[in-house]
Amino acid sequence: MKRGFFLLASALILSPLLPAQTGPGGFPEPEAEFAGIRLGDDIGTVKKNLPGNPYFRYRGERDVSFLPRRPETVIDCAGSYQVKRGLFQFHQDRLYILTLYLDPEKVDYYSLFTGLSRKYGPPADLDPSGAVWESETLRLSLEKPLTVKYVDRGTFASIRAAGAAEKSVEDMSRARFLDLF
Image (cartoon, helix red, strand yellow):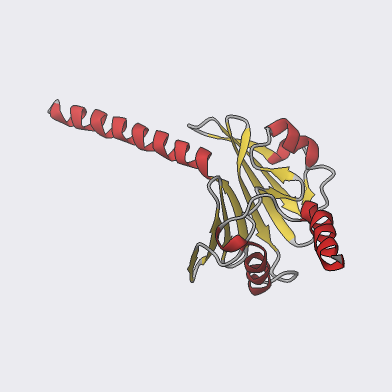
């Protein structure tokens, strides 16, 4: 009886500490967040959260640029501590790619790979250039020499599909132009 009560009490106490969603093998799915900045946040929220974040040296509007031909904004700022540089890419004012260039003098690829594997299980894809952990909504990659990239899979897929459609229209237009001769 005491043993059953102890197990029940332990489960109730520890359950808030356990992740809500688990992937293959019972490991938690990768989180779409780094240091309080989440994929899907609007640009205003990210700009508001960056100045107080210890991993980034955000200087304000001078770190923000716009990419030509696409409705995308990029925040590129210097990092602090283990982060050398942070790149935040927005589509329709929502963060969909977060890239962290890490300092190899302060953290190494193997330690990060080991930590991610312990937390999220074996990578979905592993090759000499890096490792990838995925969920339905997120792609988390650790790339060599030492870059971590969070990608919103849904937004990325829609951008790729729109790009393919745009390229197809350009190809048709080119073919029509060539037919004129």
